Image (cartoon, helix red, strand yellow):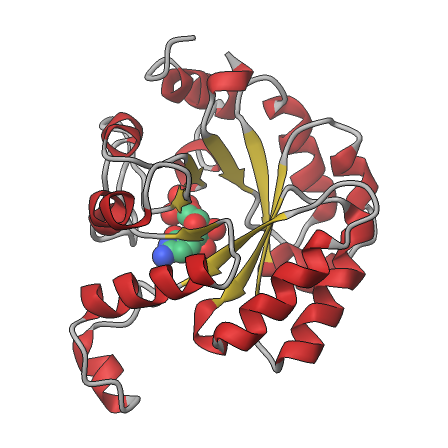
Length: 233
Ligand code: C5P
């Protein structure tokens, strides 16, 4: 079941003991782990090998955004952790993404896949207008995803609402990692536009990021299994 399981559980906590305990319990019940800024700002690479030792794919969601040379350097510094995925902001531009892809390609052992963040889902067209980007949000997402693809990135993070469109324009091999996922039995929390795990995959998602429906459940392993049941081996 693990091979087919597209779910990356978001370990959104600064507490390394809690994160590791949850990750250990979820081994074999989810497809991978997402370690984001909340964890990484508190702990850095300290204890990272404890997660690697679990043998589960790791998505390091650090959303890098800086000049090309600095982002390339940051990627190089992360290579020793051997994450499977790293995120960078596509709005850093083509040269930044190309520099990041080149740095990732120079991995001595495991090359991480680079995923682009397009337009943050917390921003709507009015927000983009305030930033001087007078564009329709979905067009900007499409433009940035295509730029990411041309610049050598392996995929993008996208909302459920964008999956189908991006699958059509970016072709079958582009990775689409999708948060904002809610099983039909779970509360949506602060996620406004949600989709069930099965729906998102049917529309073209390759990986799903799910946090609170698993981490906030009374029995996280049972919740993960219920989600995994949507993807029979
Ligand atoms: O708990 P929940 O399932 O909502 O967690 C979703 C995870 O995906 C969190 O780590 C959140 O930061 C991340 N995320 C998101 N929406 C985005 C991008 C990332 O919820 N647009």
